Image 1 (cartoon, rainbow, N blue to C red):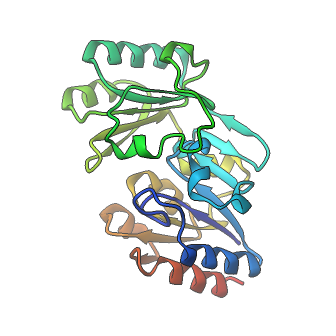
Image 2 (image 1 turned 120 degrees about the horizontal axis):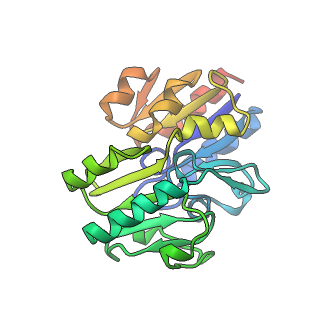
Image 3 (image 1 turned 135 degrees about the vertical axis):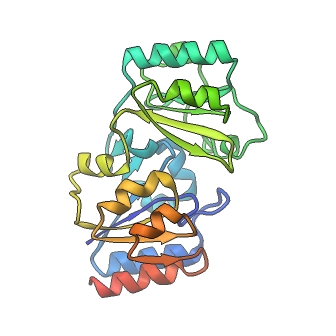
Amino acid sequence: MKFVFDLDGTICFKGKPLTDEILEAFQQVEADGHAIIIASARPIRDIYPVLTKSYYALSMVGGNGAFIFDGEKIEVQAFSQETRQILEQLFKEGNLRYLVDGAWDYSYTGPEHHPIFQQLDALKLAQNSSFESLEEIVKCVLFTQDINVLKQLQQVDVVIHVHGEEGILDISPSGVHKATGLMRLGIEPGTYIAFGNDENDFHMLQQAKVAVCVGTNDKLQKIAHHICDEQSVADRIRSLSSQYK
């Protein structure tokens, strides 16, 4: 069985690396013969800092499906050139702050006190470049919740996740979500156990054989087979690992 894990708010909390308890649960998952896959909103570059090096070669979905990593190489699904131009115009007209990810490098103009900045390229693997210099635009975060900006984006062929607590709009290319990323890795619906906590985990949990909601997201709780909190997620990993051994 494949075990698919979102990171932030699911098995990784407040941007800190995985705890010993989660890592011990991972060891049981592997000992029971299962595979571990990471599926995060983070680009692949920013997944590494919260993992131990022994897990750097895991298969991963990043950027809510815009990035996939098969253990050897990264592939991306980028915004179209037309969408890129619309986003650039929106930035300029609204004087918006943003984080834009290319295939590896990024462009960041957001506030330095924001939690996203604290976890941005923590290992210093990439460069903060100008928007114009990025060859491909794979993911975009806007540091705003202006309803007019949201309305403009809703007219564009993109996927939008609103994160109220963080005060951001998280934007991905059309048709991209974690479940499509898993399929690009060859992981079909109904063949995996998924753990998630947020709106961007919905499709992944909806298509899972077993869906686990960590936390109190109402939309996810309605489709989840199991619900747990931060303190009990490691126990749930271990119990499901044993059950599907």
